[in-house]
Length: 109
Length: 120
Image (cartoon, rainbow over all chains, first blue to last red; front, side):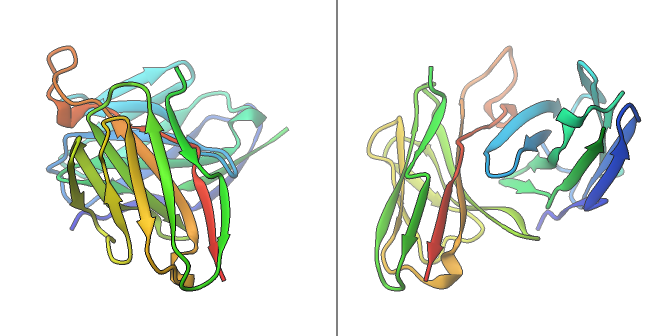
């Protein structure tokens, strides 16, 4: 059974700092990996989708990388802003979808 | 284009009561999913559907039933609610078929806003 882990569980940084969120998975037989943002009491918003054949995807200040062989993905957020405060979830697609438990990010003004 | 919508947004039930959660999508997606989200456990797949009239069990299907009578709707039923079913329920959908030459398995999911259910 696929297991997805996100470390750290919580992260607090000052505004303007660059930061990295980590996601690891145990079974490398995946189709893709997706990063989501979840605001309190809200649903999930897709940020980036990396296909298994890709190494990274970029959108604005966000960059996600994927190393399938080692079972790792990182989400890099450049020049963090208070509006980036949210929980970030990664999910891998294999036979089913498996989610990590998330990293709660707080960006302090 | 409303995307994925869920009804109701909140609900409180007593143990043993039944209810149905409705998920609707207007994107003509073939695949639809029901998840539950619990603190410290992430999202777990309850049931899913790969097309109208078809359903399948996910990781935690016990205590739930689903139906997909129309392509745009995916219903999640609790026949006899238990306190262990207190959770936030999310519905998601994604398209089948190839997108830009990529097989359907690679397509991203779109999520609804969630239903917060409390069972007393």
